Image 1 (cartoon, rainbow, N blue to C red):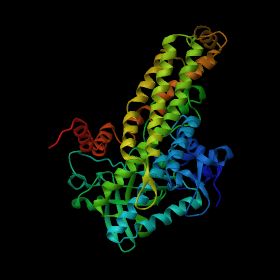
Image 2: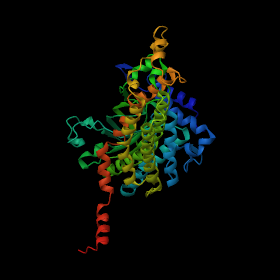
Image 3: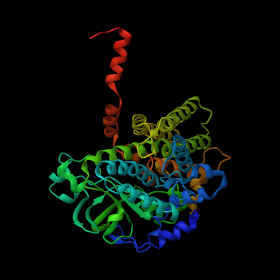
Image 4: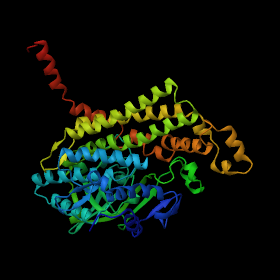
Length: 483
């Protein structure tokens, strides 16, 4: 079929019978729920932009499997050019939504599973790669959104999966049948699961022989029997129920996280990509993490562009734009943001083919990219809050602004530059609040720290990939040291 429009995507999600819970209640219509709808709109943008000729080169690619143009989020990277375009596409979407558009995890899972299944088959004579190509082709032909799920609850971090007091704290195989497997467990922090047609499961860490039941990867539809989601809370989330478009800050777009529970879910053989091959769990984790850490050099930069623009507007509206310290802070924000982008582009340009033929980023540079993302957005947010001023967290509500008695008072005392309306000043401050402290903080500030692995995870990979012994040999050669 042809690429779906955004509206077709919305209706396709509406047809799914997903089990969703929030605030202690089952949500019968998540598509139209006011708290959940902005996250759906963010994914919709990945479909809308793919329909526009000016964005075709970034948003779509030619599939070697269907022979047709597909959404880049379902593409298997064929070159370093594909890797670079991925980052540019993510920056564009960050600029357009100022939120998490949620499809990066599935795209990164696609490419990590693609190469790992190939190498698993080479060693064990399995058919996982064939299974995955059939699945990927199905996704491309139907223009589906796929969530990627790696993070398990993990329980006691000092213990391996098989050592946990509760064996379900890592998702595991509980039954093997002739036609498939039954799995039980949960995946956490699942951005976009609510808005996906399918979900790819991956192990969360390297495994040993004792953990082979936890070394599992597969894909199933999101409305498969036994799957249900519990939506996580976000700061300011219930503002979306108040009917104030202004107080939300970013009323159209957003993102939500879910705890996805697998309560004895059946997975047919043709949807299995790993089933006990524990020695390949680490490879899959490492490759997925590398791709996903590359992603942050695009999406977070795009959202950063919006935040920098909002801070600059706040300075204009406050009458402070000409102050030298304001100019310097905006320069610093831009410098930090573009440094993140440089890392995303660099690890892409330095990519190389895997044994399977698809392209992977330079893992060292991808981890350096994400390590910077754990730091720079926090400084960008700090500077934005500095420029915006205290009103960003003390402004009255839109209801007060509209009140016949209070509105004129607010308009009188909260106006900055006379030529700018008080409403517009408050709107830009609410957007800054949203990006720095509110519901979008999950997609920007807090997620910058923990998404794609916490800071220590990148430092471990940087230590592995840093080739310190080679650097020692270089120093010996220059110093004419002979041993």
